[in-house]
Image 1: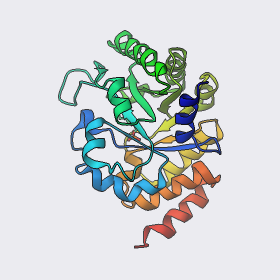
Image 2: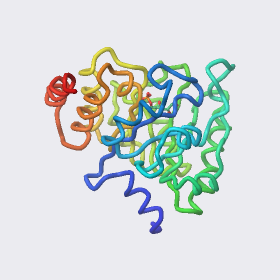
Image 3: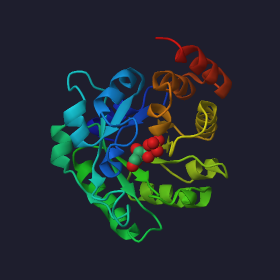
Length: 264
Ligand code: 5RP
């Protein structure tokens, strides 16, 4: 592996082999979604506890201090919205030149396996990998499901992750599932990180699925709504970080959450 690629990956994946990415990219199709109305305000208190931020260039330039940032995973796919016909109809929105200008540690792109835009989004990924690899920039593929959240079972996620890895993604971001997440990870030859999806009912539920996913081989998380839509986001991110980086079990992490949540 070339020095640049290795260096960028080591900014994202810590010496313990684990990572905590904080996604603040939802506005690129959801608009000013709840708790992300002012992204800079959401990011600021959480920044010390994440290993990297997943953002679009617009949020990066307008809401992230370039003199005090974590490594950036630049969201480079989009072109759809909640108001449009199909969230899967994405293109590449941002060039590699722009990713270099912004000093991105990686770029991230969604693929929509099984959708009407399967071929288009998979070829977007392949093209992005071709361009990004020339400059030593890792590509993180996001196995997206749009509005079809029910698609998130082991069979579908294993298919999506494997295809993304085969097309050259260096890291794959997917959903945790309760019917064989180990099969998803074992079938994917590159590291897998877990997204959260819509907010869970309780913090414990989140800590439990993240713990389970880590036991089954995920290297970390790319968790958004279940952090910043929680009533106590700073406590939540620290509790999750304890699971990802400090081998905390759900009970220990939940105790930490409880003790932190009332602190000023
Ligand atoms: C949005 C994304 C998000 O990065 C991803 O879904 C993770 O966020 P959350 O934990 O809120 O699901 O790709 O398109």
